[in-house]
Amino acid sequence: MRLTPPPHQPKIITEVWRGLQLAMADVADRPLALLIAVSGGADSICLCECVAQLSATLPITASVAHFNHQLRGHDSDEDAEFVQAFATARGLPLQIGHGDVAAHAQRERVSIEVAARHLRYAFLAQTAQAYDAKHILLAHHADDQAETILLRLIRGTGIAGLQGMRLISPLPISTPQTQHLRLLRPLLRVSRADIEVFCNEHHLDYRHDSSNDDPHHLRNRVRHELMPLLGQFNPGIRTVLTNLAETAAEDSDIVAAATHIAYAQLQLPVDEASPQFNRLAWQQLSMGLQRATLREGVRQIKGDVIHLKFAAIEEARIVLNSSARHGEIALLSDVRLVISGDCFKFSQIPSKA
Image (cartoon, rainbow, N blue to C red; front, side, top):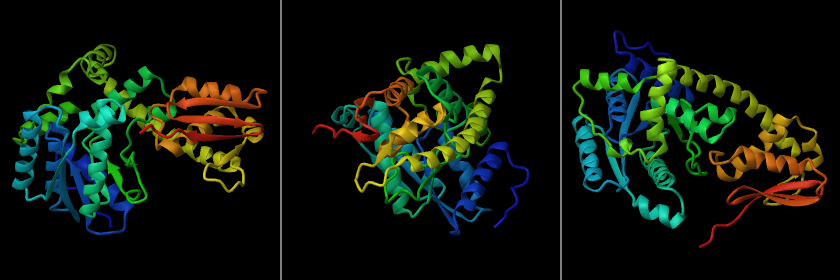
């Protein structure tokens, strides 16, 4: 079904409409069920308001999900109450979840950021299934995209990292039960400043998360220190970085297709839970495909390669190309590359109870 964009609408609503059009083209069901993740901040309030307005002209049904991370005491509870009032005023079904992020981080021995991300996505996936929604809308915007690119450059990345966040992507913690779900980010080309202008013009109140001002978080330093500095060299730095992300995403699709073909051809016909790969055939690949297939092996185990460092890939590549007949290289803290003669495999180390 092809629909015309709503006339005489602000740029932000047009951007959200375009994103929803892509989502509707991605599935056959009508109406399209959407779950909107709303934190209470300006970006998610703006997104929810846009979807609420568009629901009058598009075949969509929307629900709201809010996750209380329990990290800011009474402020976190007030965020949840604010989102509840916002959703109720617009007649949108709402599900509020909560989790002890700090306890989860300590138990799993991960950072607060990683723990929050894991619990939040698990809640969103569960809620989407309950509402029979195939798309989860997130309010990431152009400033978030630019900051993500810079963070990855600082930490070290390749073309896959430069693509940043994509308009439509699978869940990072996908399971057989949730692999049909997709994340949708309609505001990726909209700046934070434009979002705040939209909220002010439409008299939308929103919450401010004080943790976004904490200079101990690297992202906040990139946002408040590095981005303004780069803006002195190029006032359009956010647009430059978001355009870079789109170009890298297109190039990454080409690389991914070649990688999947090479990865499949390297697998040996051995009936094992842990597949083995032809080392001699791998050595005949170009340097780029050698690195890409090693990253793919990690992705098959972990679901993503966010924490995979270039140095680990290079160490594995050098050893695989050497005359060493046996070896074990740590690609991540819990993922090893195991070499045995003319074969190699990827192995995950079970976490300690």
